[in-house]
Length: 206
Image (tube, rainbow, N blue to C red; front, side, top):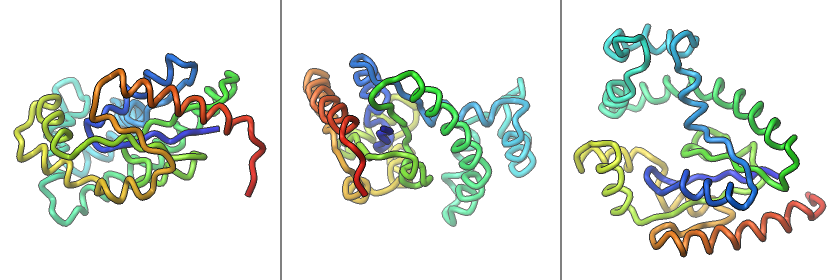
């Protein structure tokens, strides 16, 4: 069984995934795979550099994520974001499937697909259930500004560019509230782990 784990930026997706991992559930992070497909030598990076110029590359030829992000977020038409997704998402999906198949072969009752764009990218179609990690928007902005070293205005723009919180919650099968303590987060993870193990043993019904 595959559990799609998602949430807005700075909601604590990786922290929650590690808590599940401690209980025996392996995971693959779509962000890690997204970085793989734009490494030097990858076709996607060549396409990105051809479209946006050498200004989106570091001196060593790697992708300057900050420069690219500024270009994409300044484009109010969202055409650049859509183009970028058309180049990267199919390649990410292909590699995610391979990673998930490898993890599933390890015999765990369920595996996690951790993806900030689970719904937007269509990756939810690879999952049996969608778990949304939820935090208040104000906390997202605060954490994003601190983590990514951006000002509050850019942090707000990043949050605003994502799927609205209400829509994400409406599409969730399960919700974990990560606005409190680590102890409370781990309590919720343990309860969800119990539920997922039970579901994994239940014959699938259409």
